[in-house]
Image (cartoon, rainbow, N blue to C red; front, side, top):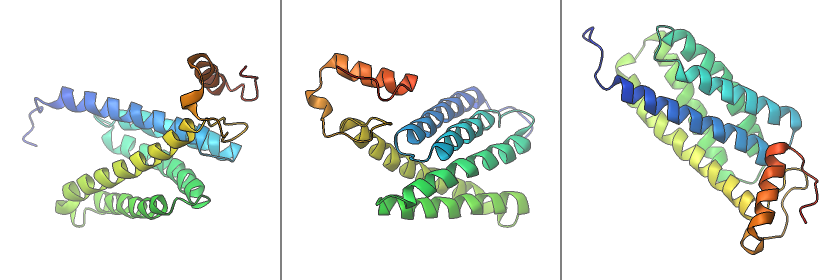
Length: 186
C-alpha cells in the first residue's frame, strides 16, 4: 500500500498455498465421488486443479492475469459442480451455490469495473466465508458417501465402513485411487 513489502507476506503466501492445495483435493474428491458423468468428472478435476494452481501464483507480478485465468478455470469447475448438485436432492447446497455464483460475479464486476471498489474488501471476505461454508457442506456429502462404502463404479453400497475390517478399507481406497473400481475386495 505504501510501497513497502508487508512483513506478513510469507505467511499469506503459505496460507494461500495450503488453501489452494486443499481446494484442489476437494475438486478431485467431488469429481470422483459425487459426479456421475465421466466428461464432467474429468472437467471438474482438470479445471478445478488448474484454477487452484493459477490462484497460488496471484502473489507474483502477474496478479491480474492469474486472477483472470484462475477465475475462468474455476468458473468451469463450479458450473460442473452446480450441475451435479442440481441433479441431486441437496436443496441447501443448491441455494448456497447460487449465492456463491452471485457473490463471485459481484467480486469480478467490482474488481474490473472499479465501481464501488471501496466495498470490494468486505464483499471478498463475505464471499470467502460463504464459499467456504458451501465447500464444507459438499465435503460433508462426500464424507457421507465414503462412510456408507461408496464405490465410484458400483455406487453406494449398503455396507457400513464401521463393520469392514481395515484391510478391506485399504483395498477400497487403493481401488479408488488406482481407478480399478470393480476389482473384488475379498
